[in-house]
Length: 100
Image 1 (tube, one colour):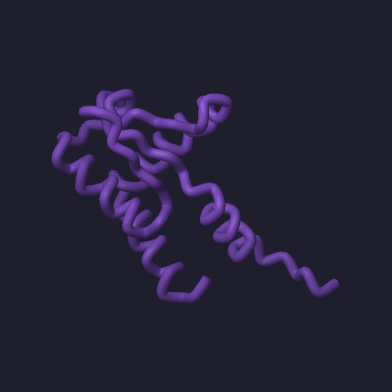
Image 2 (image 1 turned 90 degrees about the horizontal axis):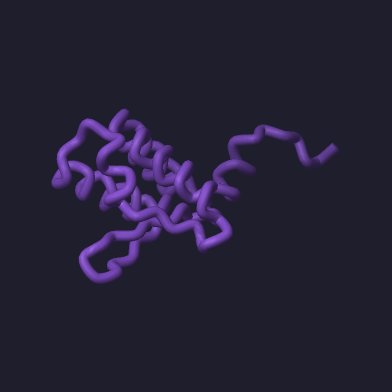
């Protein structure tokens, strides 16, 4: 992963509302891991004090940073955490010296 991609990820998470939205998606992902880790946006929209258009914008930013994937199912929007990216970022941030 290059520094430009890392900066894009951190920029996406630097907005407090976007970070809160990502954390809600991640929490829903964890609780529904047996069913594919899906999170219906309608299930979390009421938890946040943000209007639907703003949530839509924040979801787009999270998806552009590759932190989540989205899928339209009828009139519903489903989000999933990009586990591969989260694992990769976690390894980079762990600061463990693997050369020991």
